[in-house]
Length: 551
Image (cartoon, one colour):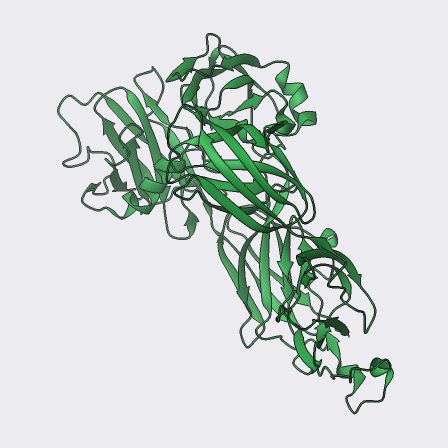
């Protein structure tokens, strides 16, 4: 059962609503909670996922998935016990939250969980709801003399599989205190990475005169103080590819130290002609599957139209600058002191204007969002469609992009893209330097739910990851749908786009790169094919169960 909307309503609102709560009790019925004629009990114990110890004083909440606003809550007894009475057969979302633990729904993975199903001959009275103790990652940033570095910028990254491919994404950031200390609290189990960057407190960047021998001429500044700290990843890597993961389990308290080492600071020169206006180049450096701006440098005007960038560590950068034909992007190795930033030799950034229509609808929904996904599966640009059904993106870097569209209550996929009357194959857009693209995008709306049951040895299997795999998956990443099977093995893949699919169910498949063709092949041959037509259907029921495959 997907929790995108239901968890938002339940967690953000329901856990704080006391008027629906019932008092703690060990075994007796909850006062004021049982309706006359109640037939089913939903009961069990909340335990620590790491020690299996019962968790007293834990708030447990439940709601019917068809009526997520009607939330009931209670506090577990000293033995971690909870109990609710359901007035009839149905599906219920069961959630728990306790201080010092990561709140979760029953058997939750990412935004998915297993719904409790009553009336199906299933034991719902001996449930075990596991909560992971929150982990904490803290440490210090120190300089080359082992002294603490204050106001260092510390970034936290986490390994992520939610997009169907292994990625390392930025999840949090902070700055060190006057003792060089930092802390990231309430972390869920996973593999994390940490980086730190700062400016040496003692650094002095001399400003040379603007002549040919400027950078070799004598200066009163001590060149040993003309240094910078490169971004450093735990433990002592200056390249993200060499960073070491920090595995955290529930309840871990891990401390690490990052040591910053100074390197000679580069002085980079760039020119702005008269009439260009001032537009300082921006430098970005690769950080795992994204890029981060370099910030610890200074810009000095050394003569009319001539600027000096000081305090830059050597390395490979993406540089955005203003050239004769507009904004440009260059990938450059900055290695030499006095190196010229060529503001006229990069790839000119492009502009993309899209006119959007939804097939079968006269008007474009006002809450529709439109975006562009790069090769690293990072959304690089997005905004809401305007009142004319259009969206405009400027400063788009050349490359291949997948076109995405989404809304808060509906899903969409690209059915057709055309440019100047010529249709573009698939949903991928090629952006060339300095292009000004006007495209028309036709969207298909996901209006069909695909329902079925996942089984293991002929019985309904709870907690399996169910994946709806489109034909040519590498070209239709937005067509994928996932769910987690409920207590009776049933699942519901919502808002499916018209097309042909293979449905598979995998045991403990949450950390697989489930969208990759090489991974899918071994599972797809045991899956079931289903076709969703263009004519909107409320739901499709699979005639045969899906056998859960081992990971």
